[in-house]
Image 1: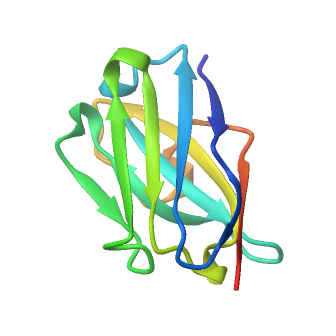
Image 2: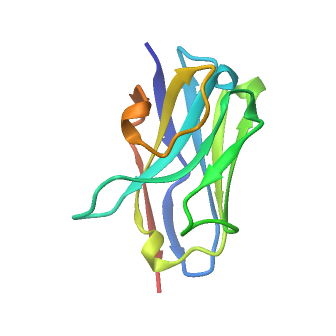
Length: 125
């Protein structure tokens, strides 16, 4: 069983940056698809970024392309989400998730088996 713990959220002004981290245990992140999702109040959970096992392929939602970057630190078994150029519409609870062994990233939540507790990101205008 995997456990994921997110950190790095907070309050930032529009145009600012934050770096989220997701520390994993019970799974070696380099061997699994990893993803970041977010959920704003009253909205469904939506895909933000994903990374395939091995880190060779990444994918992003159109709304964050060019601003966000997903990365992996294998030595620390941690996945990061660097967020630049933040906008008020990026305000949400951000979740990391681990998918299937040896699989590619997916934008579909049901393709992920374990989820973290989430970290709040608030962007003020």
